[in-house]
Length: 126
Image (cartoon, rainbow, N blue to C red):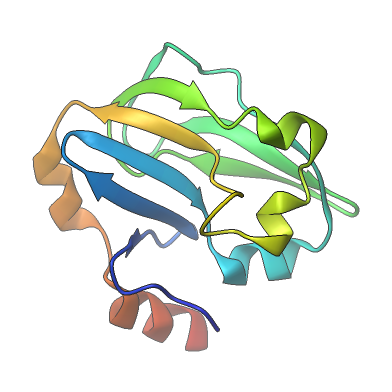
């Protein structure tokens, strides 16, 4: 299982890459594997401020739809438009081309609430 050490993680299986005051967010390799083939990514919160823990979008796989939860409060400033034509990028490259949104963080202290790779690995392995 690929868990990049430089990323932060949530109990809801999102990953977060922090770059200054901007956070890039996607779902983990574990999450995409559990969901199966992803056929659609829906994010309708572009330009909205979304609170930590609120739903910012959803992922539709062949058999299920799963909500996406905001790991940090902030304004959604960018959606990965490549996912409109190629939602399968979330399956093939979840930590790279399969990223979902970029957020301008409102409260960087919330980073302290996120899991590191070791804690996330422990979570998913039980």
